[in-house]
Length: 88
Image 1 (tube, rainbow, N blue to C red):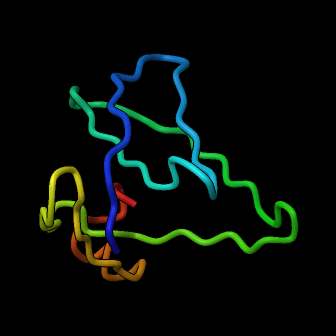
Image 2 (image 1 turned 90 degrees about the horizontal axis):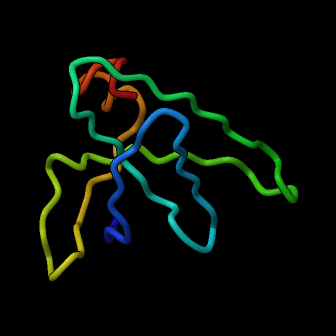
């Protein structure tokens, strides 16, 4: 899979991110403290479309050109084995 960063933000209490089919459909969060939480809401069966989540190995990404990263898709168990349940 190829991904490209489109924005970078520093979140704070009450901030949010969203994804859509048209824009921003990949996101990752990095903490700058030892303790952080996210609250995720998944909307299923929106406009009769299936919900799909792909785990990717962002830490093993390869830069292929300016801003473009090649990342490996991982199945859920592979992601948990590599990064633990707290990263999923």
